[in-house]
Image (cartoon, rainbow over all chains, first blue to last red):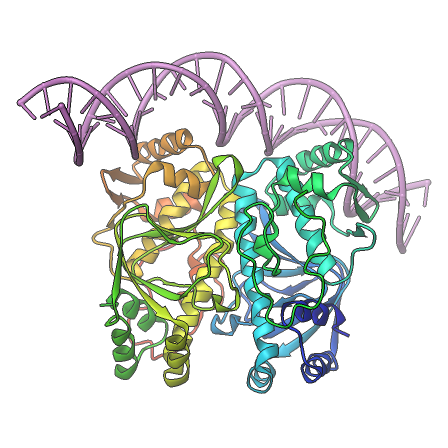
Length: 264
Length: 264
DNA sequence: CGGCTGCTTGAACTTGTTCAACAGCGGTGG
DNA sequence: CCACCGCTGTTGAACAAGTTCAAGCAGCCG
């Protein structure tokens, strides 16, 4: 099921039963299992359509000469990917499975069908797509302006909030299947420095990163260190740092606006 | 006139006379003149609709604590901005005029009208929007993986190609109204280091940057130094580095595919 | 057991930063 | 007209953050 996606979109715009059913139907099509390290979309290849990540992690990645590569974004369960890229005939970056993943491929005609028959659902998908662009912008700020420690802390905060949105956080812990080599490619640091930065975060008792799990020990302090401001995730609750405008949820806001202890 | 935009889009998808006229009509609405340094869209503000840059340069910018700020993209004449962001009620970054600029604001209903009545034109606008996302991705690679020299060279290559697309390059020269302070914010370097990097590019006789003009003295060498691969601009000609798939232009390709001496 | 992948550590080194000062230039007001 | 100011660009020198190289270790899987 795409319960992760449904959960996330429902928060943005309460979905009707019909729309939920339409979303559910999408995942009735053939699923694709991809092994860890496999390339889902190759750089320069035509993107055959949109994809939904059902389980497992992936990442967007660009390689340049000299063996250097940069991870542009992590793709989590419930993430929609390349909703709008049909206008570009060839992908400028690769999409890789960071773990064993299950995805659904959704061809363009089906996407158009959704746009026509379930405009509210389509709008919600567009929201997700725009948020992913917003994540790219914040990624630039992270790499361009923050120190290694802030960078890493910020990445953890982002993953924490995003995973919480799809219900994959349990008592401030979540599965974390990313190697330090990949963390280096994501943050623009060397693996050695990633290792030392992680040690510093552990020493400060902010996170506990063992085996394949990440436990956030003190989110408020971590967020403060990272200067993490979740506004770029466009979740619809006010930004405590700026006291900024509250983004109005589209549907009736009958649930608690924020489950997160942000900005203490 | 939005001749810059028309010229760019026409390259992607040959526009019919009707579509060109529709585009032209857009610029019949009240223009907005913005003085250098003025904020066009404030961070956290609702984005009132789409904009077209008719003349002058702008940039997207995010600020964080400690006075640090990061420029995410430069906006050039003929650039479309925030075509799709109506799904996000508040902007997560600012848009600032780097020089005196003239823009047209186009409210959402008008955009929808174009989508309905001129689907091919709308598709071309979507292409431009997607390319701007592609630029964000390359920006991340630039900051995350390249040295100061490569970074600066890459930025110059990108601006060169983009300005050439809208006809603002003259014998490998173009107006360059960006201060070193802004270049620092764009590349994630300090102003001091930007200054020294520019000197190095000058000493190598790759560019000549004087007053408010930039002259590319040896584009092939500059591109090689920068490891510049224009594929991320989705211009529709093959990537010499990878020998990668040629993106088919949508309209009849009766013009020379590439005016640029790329990849020599 | 052996080999692979991922994590950890030390030490030398490099790239880019910070601080501080100064020069050039255009605008503004006395 | 000149003095002054603020902004941009330039330079030197000390410094810090992060890289590179190299080696060793732990766990896992065949």
